[in-house]
Length: 322
Ligand SMILES: Cc1cc2nc3c(=O)[nH]c(=O)nc-3n(C[C@H](O)[C@H](O)[C@H](O)COP(=O)(O)O)c2cc1C
Image (cartoon, rainbow, N blue to C red; front, side, top):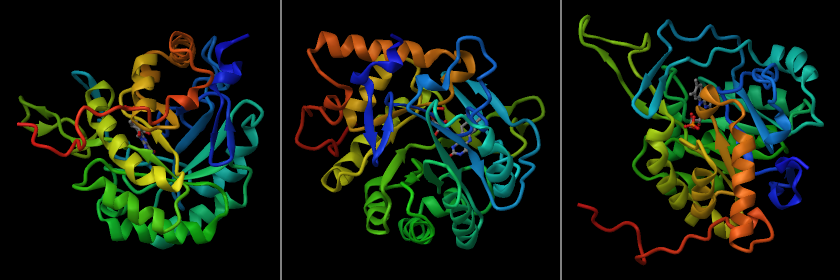
């Protein structure tokens, strides 16, 4: 039996049955087919696959360079390149094998109306759940401009909530002062779940030309460099989400089972894998097996028992760290 078929790895996420707690992250797997040509890769090793960010009209994305490797991380400024929601629903979704895994749409927009329109279009499709990206740092309008303001975040959630009965997952930005306050407003506005976190804003500079390396000047940092930030944000959002039974997809820099287990302990129900897929498309197999080994070593019957099991050293993590 492959690790992903082991029932101890199964989790319930907003009523969806994930066969493992792993989620392939938006922007890192195209529209669900990207790695299926790689020998040994299977979408069945993931509980869910998040499709690339989708807008109302097609978007060509940003000018090059769009990605740049940094120590321990990856800067990207793709600019939400996508063929538009109609093509995704009419031409791409029918090609996906829904028996392999759950598929999650990732919705972006420049206006509230666009978020609502794209969500409504996905509502009338076989997609399993809808993630709203209010935290994209790579577009000039919308994206992180919505996500860094709790009131605007809540308004996006409200309009999307009206447009769908499918599970609604709000993807929170780490580029804000108080992520817990934002999460609270999104819960009031009707979100069913959270993704925590999107990329951190960053820049790289070419010292010869004295220009930013990325065509968009700034981009989003992902990969191992952001993992400690992501863990703290998951812990903070979990405090707010737990009383409402609202689950979290923890993400940011996961490359191995130990990373994934840290996110589960911090409060995540599911764990996202993104940048790591670029250098090891088969990484999910190892992570699933590593989680099973951990369950054995700790005498646990299922992965859900790890979620939120953090034992703090202090009553509050908000103390002075200097
Ligand atoms: C090249 C690239 C493209 C991305 N595109 C999107 C996107 O379209 N929508 C979105 O919500 N997040 C997008 N992300 C963010 C990832 O889904 C994820 O939240 C982030 O990279 C942190 O996880 P990681 O460190 O495991 O990659 C993108 C990330 C990368 C590296």
